[in-house]
Length: 196
Image (cartoon, rainbow, N blue to C red):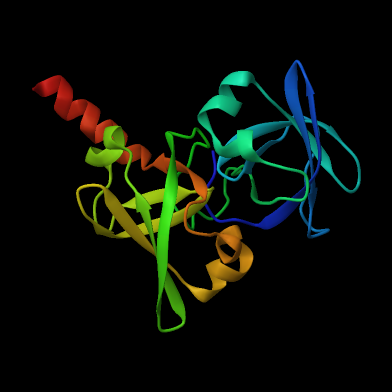
């Protein structure tokens, strides 16, 4: 379980395709702590540390994870968002995030609003009922508040701090991102379906 508050960025230093895909990631900050078996959100994907050194850690991705996330397009040198799993007693500053990606979608465009930037994304049709103004959503592991919603698009506002500590500073129109809907919205929708 995560909060969607990115604690570091990591540089992909190695990708090996030998059966499953092993990806080695070097956190930028020396303070980022990890150990064997730890769960780490990597661009919003919950992955398990299978090997590590003092400078990097390796995660293994199944064919299914590669198929349903943006990990398939990751390349050596790419920078991704990192967050260690939530421990009991930690502050919950974002919202509860499972690290189970619901869909991959496209970044459409961004627009400056003062010092912040509003990013607009496509809504994958199956997720439309879960996305509402002022609701929570996770994009590449970042907990965000939905700003505006239309039939097939939604937007979020990226404040300067989030811009500086996540990969939003490098995001370009047309880039693919991992989406995870708010877990509470998922369960409310399920209950309504069961009553119908």
